[in-house]
Length: 183
Length: 102
Image 1: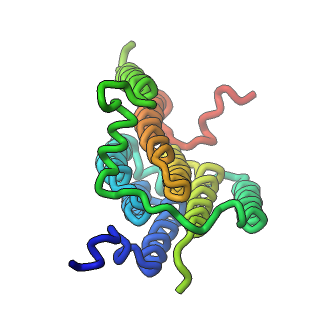
Image 2: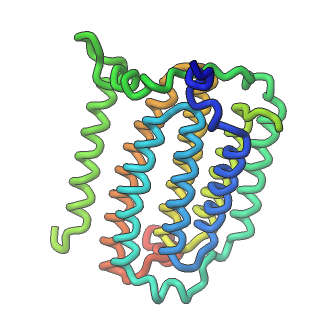
C-alpha cells in the first residue's frame, strides 16, 4: 500500500506553498489599500481571500476554506462590486486618496506591528511546535456535529448558530430598509 | 527549509491585520475602508484556524465560521448605509461625512 495515503494532505503542504500563498495574500493586501480605482482594490481583495483559503487548506480546515470561497469570494465581494458600480467612482478616483492625517495613521499602524512582533518573539515558547493533525476527511462531519448536534442531542454551538441566523435576518432587513428611497 | 509552524501563520495574520488597519486609518473612500475591515476579519480568522490546528480541536474553526457570518452581516449593513448616504450627499469620502463632528 502506498504510504502517502496514510499521511493525509501532508505531501502537498510544503513550505514552498506556504510562502507562495502568504506572499500572494500580503502583496494583494497591499494592493487593496493602495489602488486608486475601487474595482482594482476589490479584485486584489479576491486574490487575498483565495490565498487565505489556500492557507486554511494547509491547516487541515477544508470546510472553512470552502466557506471562505463561497461566502467571501462569491457573495460578499459581489456585493462590494455591485455597490462600487452604483456609486460614482469616476469623480472619487480623481480626488486625493489619503486623508490629511495619514502619516499619523501609518505611524500608529507601524507601532501596532512592532507590538505584535515583540509579543511573538517574547512569547515564542507559548506557541508549541507540534501541531496535532486533525482528521481531515471527517472535518465537515465534526463541524456539523458541533453546529447541529449529533446522536439525538443538540450540539454545543446550536444555540449560537440560531442566533447567527437571527443576526443575518436583522442585517437583511436593515439593508433593505436603509436602501429604500422613502421609509 | 524550516518546517512551517504556528508562528509563521501568526506573522502572516499580523501582517494582514496591520495592512487592514493602515487602510482604515488612511484612506478616504468608504468602500475601501469596508474592504480593509474585511482584511482585518480575515487575519483574525487565520489566527483562529491556526490555533485550532495547534490545539487539535475544532472550536477555532467554528469561531471562524461565525466570524464569516458576522462579516456578511457587517458588509450588508455597511454598504446599505453607504448607498443611503450617497443618495443624500453625493459623496463617499469619509472626511466629508462630518455632520456629527462639532
